Image (cartoon, rainbow, N blue to C red; front, top):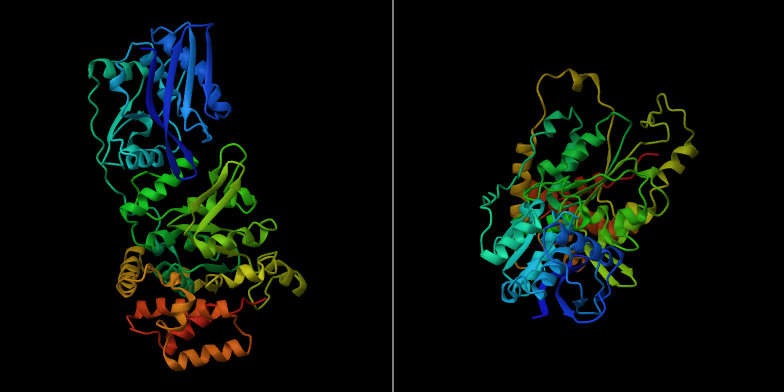
Length: 506
């Protein structure tokens, strides 16, 4: 039989589409045709597949070979189709039983000597295959740990093309120990006990972790802004299995799993440099569209140090993801949507020289320079920040204390308790965090006590806060209420939220 087919997967963003890989070998002039909108990397698969077949001692058919990837309208990219094309070609050449490969997904790039190299996007590809009813997949051994996260499928890791051919022909393969999935929910390297002093900034970080509120830390160099930001994931609750798989899927597409374990339940933290571009921040690309920093921080923390130094438009590009929790990238191949539900942490110096502390000691900047520097953080962007905290220089008393501050474990226990209270309150409403309460619900079901609402309305009349600011303060007040285990935000909770959203000194 000169016709055979098997399965592979094409990815468009996080969405996978099962692709039928068909090969026909017919009489005629020797040639190789690849159909189905392949990109340059996929078109080059011919030479990789041919070299791998020959170097493994197999016969390359010296006839007319036609490879079709259907559906034909779907753009296909990357080298992950190499293994599927190779296996289907050998099956059409009648060296592998056709029925053995019909209900299997093959993923992997072939080297010239037949080794199977790892590819990006294995986890989302397998999720798509599982939804299509496929239960067996052959993947590169280097992608085995990531693939094993989908425990409802039979995952067959392979190191070399010869191993795949042996298994398909005889059913034999090297016994590989099944990877024990030990989920990692803590990181002992970072701890809030390392932070000296900074009680207000520590409280702000705790409130941010409770309700998913965005935070701005402003203070001189060396005050501890970066230390606090890097430790926020250690006080956030462990991700659920579903959230961890979603995070791993995004990192798999981006090819950054070397920087993060596939079995980590710790909230991710992404820290792009302040010279990063808008494409790197929100995602994009010309040939292969990859998720940006805000999608890699999904279910975790996006930390941007030296925020005022970011190029024009970079921070403002985050305004839409902050509101919707997703990023949609429009390209000629279609619209791709990546998740981007993250906690934004910005850090900034109070002035260009960094020494302005409100008292002006040792600062060489003029008042105009200070205003211009902080003015780089646009008003609409600042309006989306829930907590704005002044981080004062650490004093001698704080550094001389022998006892350490509260550990991340202690703070995390309070955060988990507060989130449980919020989850019970929102159990039938479709959201779980205080920062996600819709504006309509804030005006009806989730109003603070009457005196607190009167105070906020007075602030609104004075134009001290905007309508969005009023909603932000109420959401933050609910996080204070959950921390103190109050059933409704009190006047003290609202005042605390209002204070933490106060104007930055300039």
